[in-house]
Length: 286
Image (cartoon, rainbow, N blue to C red; front, side, top):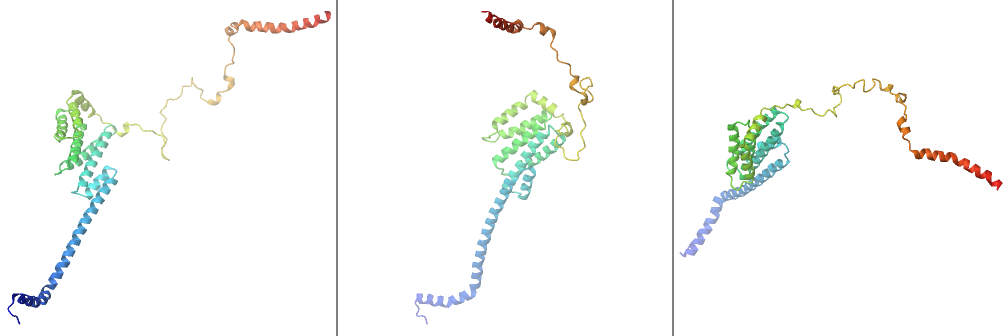
């Protein structure tokens, strides 16, 4: 029975409420605690999974070697930073290949230029692009427009405009390069060169490759050297004999010009025995 003391009343109510409260809300409390534990576990798993995915994507990026490899990395990890750098590297590699192919296979170069442009445009069109990636992508596009120019004013101006975009980037590391290319593109000599170069259509068969080291079963290559004239060498090498060589003779003028000392020495050597005989004969007489 309560005495009317407020403290006693609170203690009595707490004693009466405790078992009832636990019995009524215990399950909800337990489930809530379990839910919090699961929530923290899921959050930790997601964080760890994201970290593992980032490491995996950059690992594949580091292992890529060709333009196709980088294209695959960009496709496997879309909407990520690694996809941006992979697509940029793909475009730059395709651009280098296309420039080299211009000197050996024009048709293949055109195809590579198209692929390079598509890859670079994908990077340029990205929002919130890292400044370094944007700068490199714009430079690649400007170089592509210059390399594919036919010397006409509108195409030259397009390349110049692409270079001008790089100049709009603060503290660009390509500022001096861009200035030199813009200056060169404005010169008539440069326009004339691209007008001439765009008309060149080299093909793979135009470039003769070394023919040594051919695989087995390869057909014999035709002899392209002209035949040796008969008057230079005999038709049958077995006809060459030592007897065919002319005899070695000392020219008469060489004998006539023989030094006089040689004759003097010959005469003295012939007289020496006579001198010895005279001395031997005169000795008994004395």
